[in-house]
Structures are given as structure tokens and as C-alpha cells.
Figure (cartoon, rainbow, N blue to C red):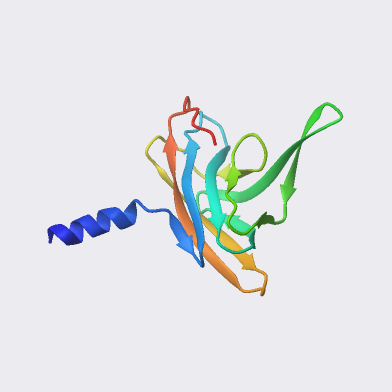
Length: 146
């Protein structure tokens, strides 16, 4: 029985995996009253080239990957239809470039909540896989961005 509990604890602490894709370190800040959107930060690595073609969460109306860039002295944000994941290269979704936004939150995010996210991946042979991960909600003042 002791070993079964240990194995369950170890498995629940590991990152999400599917078809050689690992998602780790997923977290979001708690939301302020009235806030209906939130950013999610995470690291993702694929052993072979693939791309994220969709992200969903039952806690939000939409989940979108955005790119940030400076153009003519202005910060521009654009929705990405897909995000390439080069083989064996870590891709970070954070505040400095590409990031994941949850929009139309159905309820405020509270410290300690877990935000379920489902990533749809498409590989070069066109087959698709889904990877599910839970992002921990941290205090609003957290500054652990990747």
C-alpha cells in the first residue's frame, strides 16, 4: 500500500506527456475582481517537430496563443493560428513573446485553483494528439514568469 501511494504521488507530480511532448511549469496568476482574462505561463518541449493548433479550457470561453512584437516603437499583439514546436527545443510561453491567454473567464481564478488546459497538437504526418495539463493558480503578486 505504501508503494502504491508513493507511485500515485510521483505520477501526479510529473509534467503532461503525449507522443513525446512534455508540458511543464504551467501556472497563472489569481485574477482581480472583475478581471475576465488571464495569462498562463508554461514550458513545452517536443521530441519531434509538431505544432499547437488549438488550446481549450472549460474555465474560459476562449484560449488563444498570442505573439508580442515591437513594430515602429509600438507593442503589437497578434493571435497565432498555430505555434510551431521545433524538435528537441524548449518553447516558453511567457510575457516577453508568445503567451497563452484565457479570455471570457467563467469564474475568477483563485490561489490554489487548478486550471485544466487541453492542447491539440498536429504532427507532420497530419495526425493529431491532445495533451491535458493543469496550471496552478498563484497569488496575484507572483513574478515567476519564464
